[in-house]
Every structure is written in C-alpha cells, then in structure tokens.
Length: 318
Image 1 (spheres, one colour):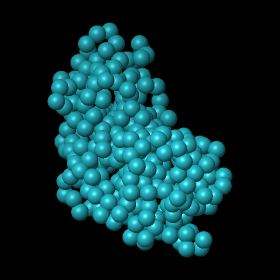
Image 2 (cartoon, helix red, strand yellow):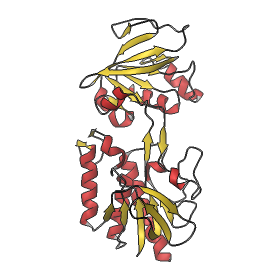
Image 3 (cartoon, one colour):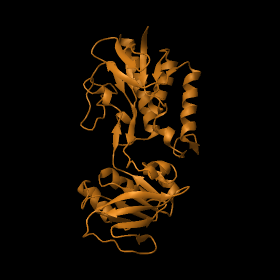
Image 4 (cartoon, helix red, strand yellow):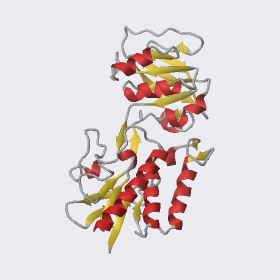
C-alpha cells in the first residue's frame, strides 16, 4: 500500500498536520515515536496555549491525539530508523515495519533541549528545573532564579526572566560569554542580573522542588562574595546558591540525524525549508526541527497546519 502522506512525529506539529490532512481526505499515517508526544510530554503546567487557561503538557498532547483519532488518523508509536527520499514513492522505515511507502512526507520530529545530565536535574525537572523561560517564567514571580549558559539563548532566557523574577543569576563556565555583543550589553546592564563566571553546576539541590544549586569555581582567581544568605561558601571551591528555579540554556538539538544526506540541513542540524518544503520536492517539515527561534507548542501547531496545506497542494498537482 502506498500512503498519501506519512507524518514523522507525534508532537504538536505532527498532530496538527494530521488533523488537516485527515479532514482533506488524505488518510494520513503518523509515525508518532516511542514514547510519543514530543517535549510536551515532559512539560508540567501549560498556561500559554490558547484555549486552555491551565493544562498539563501530557493532557494537552492527549487531547490533540484524540482530536486526530476522531478524524480517522492512524498511528504507529515507533521511531523511524531510516528513510529513502531518492526515489518515489518515498520509503520510511521503522524498527518493526521495515518499509512504508508514501507519495509525500511531513517531518515533525522536533528538537530536544540539551541538559547538564545531572541526576538531580532529572529528578527536579518540572519542579523548578526548566529549559524554557517563555513557557515557565511566569511561575517565578518575585523569586530568585539562575540561568545556566553563555550564548544568545542564555541571554534571552535571562532577560525574559527579569520580567518576573526579582533576581536572575547567570552561571557560565568560561570567563566571557559566547553571546553577541548586543545581547551581552543588555544582560550586563540589567540591574536584576548578576553573572558568576568561571563556574559550573555540581548539583541542583532540593526535595520536592528546587531549593538551590551547588556551584564549583573553575578558576582559583575567581571569588564569590557571601551575601544575603543567598550565597554560602561550602568548601575551597564549592558554593551554595539559594534559588527557586534553574533554567538550562546550553542549546537545543533538532532530532534530524536520520535525515542527514537525504535533505539539506543547516550547520546546527535544523531542516532548511521553503514554504515548508525541504530540498526534496514532496518532503515537508514543520515544528521545532525547523524552528530554532520560537520553539513553542502554538508555533509548532501553526507550522504543522501550513505544512499540511502545502502537502494537499502538492498532491493535487500529482
């Protein structure tokens, strides 16, 4: 059987695309991944998705999926392990269904935040540990938070958090930022932001929620002043910083490795598109695997809808 459209990814972009393609009578098949749902599955409370004043991330994904199933969208909860876009119909292979064939493909595999890989970070994720200030900054009104990182993303996160938090620390391993000068200037001139250079996070401290971090000073010439019970010297090079939240901002990685040598990617691995079509006609992409700037569920949904409409036009021409 040759499918009209195979959608790779079961997050907001893929699910939105599937709803539109199903309503257009294309009988889409979604390879949703394992586990399915994208980054929203790891998100706790969502308050910035239109139509829901407050909803848990997994519940929002479940509602989207049930909406798609109502229109007859079919799902395979497996990961795609290989593709072949060199000939038509396109081939998409999963672990158990070795080869599916389709006239068109929408890639909506998303991206993942890079983490510090600390056990305490994993344990407290969603309990004060986040990778998205735009998503979660609102929950830290008049609280003290830290941003980990030194690039433009970290600068943007810190500046976003100053709209809510009373104090924002930036923890960076090097003696200077990697960020653009204009972003550095904005951060260094913001009275709410304090930077601790030459330091790295050893542990995120807390039981049911974040209570602070232990940081290690990497350069013996660096000194941190104890003050206001926020910073305490624990040993020769270890300090405790009392906090309510920790935002990891060391970058994102798009889930596009299997598409290398099949479609054009930028140097960071994001898929290059024009009107949501990749470098291969008939193969489209949407969501965080394309978008390195906004990375929101709502923007991913919009991109998924647009990609679905482009697929309809493409198939009509065939």
